[in-house]
Image (cartoon, rainbow over all chains, first blue to last red; front, side, top):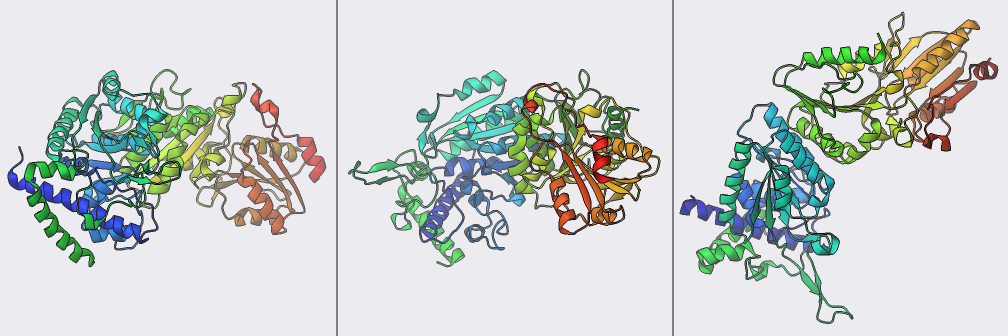
Length: 311
Length: 311
C-alpha cells in the first residue's frame, strides 16, 4: 500500500514526464533535433509504474518509443535533450540518440529500433541473471501490439518458459502500427489464451491509473519470480497527439494517428492535459487529486524544469 | 583422429575450464549431438547446456543478451543455412552493442553443410556473406593447427564472432602438418608449406584441395608455399604479397565459397595492383543451376590444368 507521500512523488514524476515531453515536442517543432523521436504522450502511467516497480538488479529493455522510460530515469531533462542533440553531455554521451537510447546505470541496458528484436535479447539477459544466481532479479521487456506480430514474440515466450525465466513482457497496445490499425492489418490475437497455451502468466491493464498499474506490476513481478515463467502484461494505451488534416476529400479533417515526429497540436501553452478522459494519465490522476492540486504541481515543476534547461 | 572428433575434443577441453557459461543449440546433448560436434561437453560450475527449441532468431538474440548480461556462451548450429533466421541480430543487435567494451563472449559455431546431396536448401557455404554484411569476425576450421588456435583463443574471447566447421570434412582424418604451422596476422592466416616455385592460397574450406594440389606438384618437383586464409574479413594482404614475391611470382588462389562476395577477389586485385605476379590462376566455384538440385557439391581442382598453365 502506497503512502500519501509516495503517491505525491509518483504524481510529481508523472507530471514532470508529461512536461518534459511537451518541452521536447516544442523544441522538435522548432527543428532542434536531427534524430527521429517517437513521443509517448499517454504512455506515462505504465512507464512510471514500471520504473517504480523495478528493483535494483532488474534489467529494462526498450523499443524505439522509449522516451517515457528513459526521460523518467534520466538525471534531468537537460541531459535527455542533450542526448537528442548527440552531445557528449547527454544521458548516453550522445552515442545513442533517440531510437536506441539506453541508460545502463539505471538498468536500461538495451534498446532496439527493430520491431521485436529486443524480446530475445531480453530473454538472454534474463538467462544471464539465472546463471549469475540473481534469483530475485527479473528482466522487463517493453514491446507493442505491432511487434507482438513478429515470430520472435512467440519464440521468446517459448524459450523463457522452457528455461524457467522470469521475463516480464509489457505490451503497450495502442492498436496502431504506424498508420494501420490493428484490425486493418491482422486478425485478433487473444494474448491471454496465447499466454495460457504456453503456461505463462498474463495481466491486462486498462484505465491509465498509475497506482493500479504499480499494484498489478508488483503482483506480476512476484508471480513471475515465484513461478519462474514469463509474464505478459498487456496495457491498453492511446498514444496521444493525433490531429486532423484538412484535404479536399476530407474538408472536416482526416484523422492522423500520432506515430513519430513532432505532435502539432500539443503545446506548452495549452498546459499538461491533452485529453479529458481515461486515455490521458494526467486526467486520471487529476480525478483522484483534483485539478487545483495538479495545476499547482504543474506550475512548480515547470519552473524547476525551465531553470534546468534555461528556457 | 578424424576432423569432428578432434574439434570436439578441443571444445570439450576448453569448456571444461570455464564456469558460468551457457552452451546452447538444438540437440547439442541429445542423439548424435550434431554428429559428435558437441558430444560429452561438461562445462564448469554454474554453467548450463541447453537443448533449445527450434528458434534460431531468438537463440541468436539470447546469445547477445547473455553477452550484455556478462555471461559467455556458444551457440552450436547444425547447419549454416539455419542462421539466416538470425541475421537481424548478427547485423542490427551487434551493430548497436559492438562499440562497447564486451563483458563476455558470444560465439556462433555453425556447421557448413557442404557434404553434398542434401538439396538446394542445404547448399549455403558462404560464411563470408554472414560476416561481411556487418563486418563480423568469422573463421573457418580446416585442420588441427587452426582448430587449436581458434578454439583456444577465439571461442571465449570477449566479443562476438562466428567460427564454422565443414561437414564434408567430418569423417576425414584431421589434417596435420609435420612442421609447426606459421601463424600470421594473429592467427587469421597460416603458412603451412614453404616452397619457392609457386604460392597456393586457400580460402573458406579449400585447404584440403590446396594441399592435394601441392602434393601433386611436389611429385613433379615443383615446391609450393601453402597459405590458408581462415578469416572472412578482408585485411592487409602484405604478408601474402611478400610470400608471392619469393615464389617465382606464380600464384594459385582456391576458393570453394559459393558466394559472389568473397575476400579472395580482394587478394587477386591486390596481387595485380601491386604487380606481384607474372602468372596467376584464380579457381573458384562457377555459378550453376546444378547448385539447386541434389549434387556432390565438390570443389574439384584439375591438377593437370594448373601444371600446364603455370609451368
